[in-house]
Length: 485
Ligand SMILES: O=P(O)(O)OC[C@H]1O[C@H](O[C@H]2O[C@H](CO)[C@@H](O)[C@H](O)[C@H]2O)[C@H](O)[C@@H](O)[C@@H]1O
Ligand SMILES: O=c1ccn([C@@H]2O[C@H](COP(=O)(O)OP(=O)(O)O)[C@@H](O)[C@H]2O)c(=O)[nH]1
Image 1: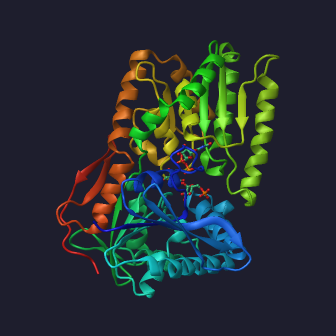
Image 2: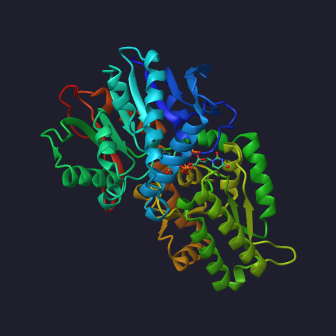
Image 3: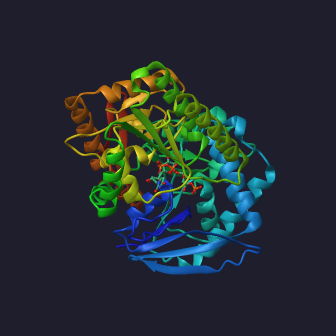
């Protein structure tokens, strides 16, 4: 079997203790690599005054983890800069927060080149290479420059935005051209795939080849939608672990006379936290009877806190929560509990299970794995209700959630009232459908579909189709004729 080399900015080796750091990408890759002998390469999370290119290798649960430190200036221009001040806001439709500094783009290209040069000696002829996310779009171009002819795939974890947004980037063409150095380019949803194709057809005169691949810039790539999932089996196991049970018991004891609603998100402006709180405030305003009965537990670990837009959202949330609690708290009751720290997955599982409803209300989100984890943690005899933004990639699959528009406080408030009043039969019916999807389209299916496509499997090309009325399903679509390059 060929080795799988996974490349991502964030590297988070599985510790087996449920202690991994926050973020869906790292969670998913740890699970995806579990059954593969391979290498996981990326940033160590540390900076040094000068770039050393020194590889730090460790073996963790069968996976070789290879990390490299970033130079402080690179970290500012590449991670805080181009990745998180330019691409992240733009790809989440926040042109107002997007910085277009040229130095960020230069730092971004430099780090991708450095990563490629550091990874190059580890690559063997039969390896397949899978690069992840917006930090590393130019990796394949840099590896090809170094003579790498292996199959290389790319998966974008965040949305691909509409054509008109992409062209606000001063160097949008080279960015998209870089994607054509990959053999396969994967997106979370059909919507993102179509937006990408829209750019290729309308901006650079690209076209579809007879076998359905994309041709542009004199290159051909296979683009598809591969919705990511969670490790549902592992989550079910974690939910029954002693620590999860302890947390569940504690939360359930606190909620004997109360109903707990939960939110779990990195503290990010894309997650719609302000809108969620305004929706909860509206609910408290409109439902006097619920005021002492319903509490919101919002877990929001800090994220990218050197970036100004993240500092701003944090202080706005502090103010808003103070206002709502000030208006609706009683001497012995606080409606919103707000925690700026991260919790282990087993602890989260216990909290999810104790919550009557989950509020997942991003304004834009590539997928949102919290929505899937909430479903996977429920008690099948008494499941809670998922309230989910239509703008999360997960909404494409999770049709039996209460789907809302997060921009509307009234919709959030109504959905909360509906969720908390929903009878057991309906809760079970909805949950069974959601759980079926979470289990079938899990992280293993995602990995296997993508890797099959990357291997150019002549018989099975996994692709994901969505129709407006049906959840995305994995289908055996077409035969791929030979390898690309
Ligand atoms: O690495 P950080 O800067 O600390 O940020 C954490 C991760 O955030 C983003 O996650 C995305 O991937 C999830 C899994 O596919 C998806 O469910 C979610 O919608 C995305 O936002 C980011 O894309 C990752 O690169 C970061 O590691
Ligand atoms: O305190 C926390 C908060 C979040 N998470 C995990 O972080 C991931 C968040 O992934 P998601 O796709 O929802 O969003 P992202 O943060 O990647 O944008 C999920 O697996 C959560 O379980 C965690 O381990 N501890």
